[in-house]
Length: 416
View 1 (cartoon, rainbow, N blue to C red):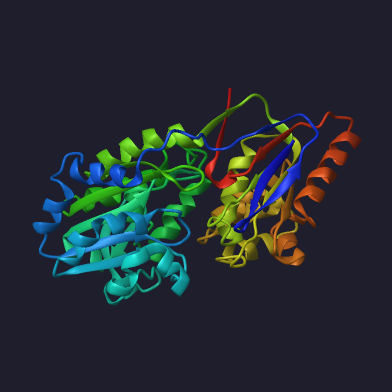
View 2: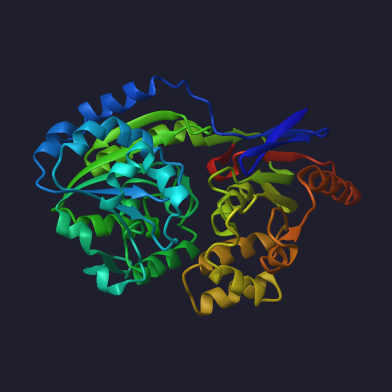
């Protein structure tokens, strides 16, 4: 059979002639998008309707995701347009975390039709500007919590997020828009160090130190008047569900919906796993690592994992690449990470961890030397890599069995 594998905005047909399973996010029935949005805004959890919330707010700060998330921010804002434009004091802040600022095209992707009207009211969070941060205290896990001053100055906040599994935070969305979304660099670095913990796993919230930091930050900020909008998308970025109202109630409800989409059962692990980072999650190698992280859950010890990602914007934050490239082996990477942590090292550690028990290959627009530094063996094409893996497994005297994740960044394999 042929399986369509995303590469950038295009698709490549992969011919598969061996026993295999194709794991994709589930395809739940999707209703009318406008109806889903308007119903959530009119019937929020634990709060007044959105229109009343805005009317009663003297000033309003809207926190939105950057372009590394497929959040349908533009679609949600379009439904809110009339209400927001009638308000005298609305500001936006793009929750970049430690990422770079959006490009012009990315601003238009995020804000859609309202961008030209509101661009003078849009601010971009810069985690490295210490002077822009307020100190909140220390979390229960020892993280020093700094957050953008605009958050506390606003008082009334609308946050728009999307909820899907996250390989070390448990889930994206909800409280994650604040930490790491608009947190200081030191805070993000300390929080992400907890990703090295075995408790920091996809779908895990309770006992997950990364997630606990986020909850602790919101406990300090509990006096803020926050209206939360949380979206859950299908694999093709259709709107499956939206929850609104109280930050934690809306997040918990969205998690239930996210599990219906992204948790995919499979029969047995494969000795070949091909996992793709779909657009826009293929923006760089740093973000594409999530597809590797999900793919590893379906891979046998000693197997071959093939990452497919265009990496349109290159490597991303190169801290993790520098660590990988400066180490001769994956085991050496693990040792260095435990000795001295910097933001980005968690990516290196989790990639290297796979490399200690499996072969890691990549099909990408990145230069082969860069991939080699990342402990990924560069391959010429998707079909070529897949066929090569089959031959290697056969040479080992094994029967090839493949697990294919066309939406690897968004699919969490759950063995039956």
